[in-house]
Image (tube, rainbow, N blue to C red; front, top):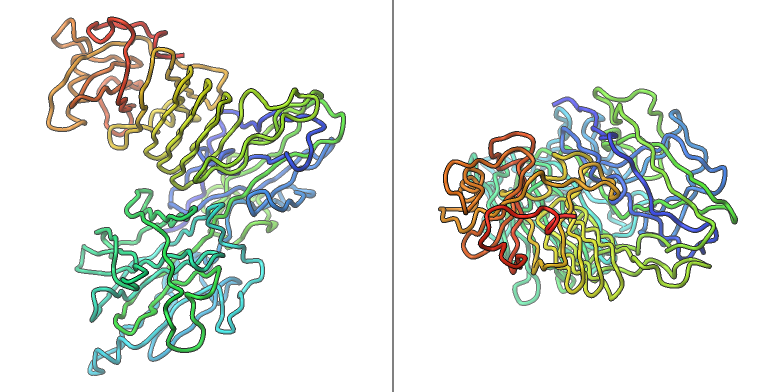
Length: 594
């Protein structure tokens, strides 16, 4: 299928958190690119995305970017439509360029035995099947595949970044199995191997084709079960699929076409003794795709490979500056083969190009009196770090400290201050701790746990549709122990200053149904438990209901009828109604929203 340009939603405003003009460089952590623009970009082809920076105001300071989570920083320099700066991903292979992976600058090809490598439309076919009458044991003995290291071993491209599990990264690839066979069910004709910079944290996934419309993807185990099939997912590997493998801390998660299908612990494969030459399991920072076993063979179509590490941007102001600065950007979809830090011409955009037709401006406010520094660093397993020291002259610790997650499944834990916790994509657990916290989940199945204090549970998006789709009956979030001082907030324009409230709020009471979707449909049909009958939930109205002992809240979008794909629903275990509201039919919106 021909490429379609990515889509950038520029209907709202994009802002970075305000900073002080005298903020120390060490505490100016900036913001992660995914937090800043991730929810604004969609791609019709499912390609990994980033941005192309087309302009930057460096008059009163310096815009900078980091490709390693904030350890090292590089100036944007002079950017324009004809010399735009690419950020957000490394394109390790793009089949749309019409060349083999080794004709692009990131991957090497290695093979042993009779194999073939053939260009196909928008990709390459790798075949290790062999042909009859050659015995199966000999056909299985062939190896072939692509990796970021050669047989020296050395990186094919020295710009390849560290695969740091602590900071998190994503490997995105598109493949389909044409044919696959094996003599051992613990092996697969196509595998993906990723080792992090700590070679004792790795994961190998095997892809099997079981029939014309079924398949299996499994993780190779370690320890006493070294290279035995462990956790697995049943998935049709015949179809072309866009896979994303996210790695964070000690875990991995595999998504297929945007849906999580497999997750588990990273493994240590270093005890493997190797058979000849380089042992990839001993090597750090490895990505390999192909046939690496003598017990299986395959024909696989390979279309794309991209790597996304944690990219951040920041503005370092000149001392004494009080005002705003900004940069402009377009969405980018990686199909042009470019990578982080490259310069491109974006004057041709939209249509089948790699760049969105729409552009957007990101703005930051710089104040003369100290404010908190940065967004609190990266999220991940333990919530990262706080938001600097409040800047000079800002009165010490800021009242609100930010914790920001990644595209993976994060657990973000606040402290006793009033925290802002942003989960972004992935299935996140947001733990506020003490204080009056604001929790924003984003895409993925999230759990909000505000703890003590008056907490705000936010469901946000650039549009009403985007905000409501962050939690639906098909993938509901959870709010734990919602209390009388807590509120829910809808934000339909990614602007915390504007609050979008339901027109009316009801309680449909206890509902019996065969499943949650059926229960929600009944709540839509009869919203008020005190006035039973045909009382449909109107557009922009909300109602609580109880299903199997758990309170749920649902909100109707602008279309009157219930739609499980677009109408909002969140589960609220431990929900505490205001006095008397559990038995009422009509409730005050202001008691639960704000």
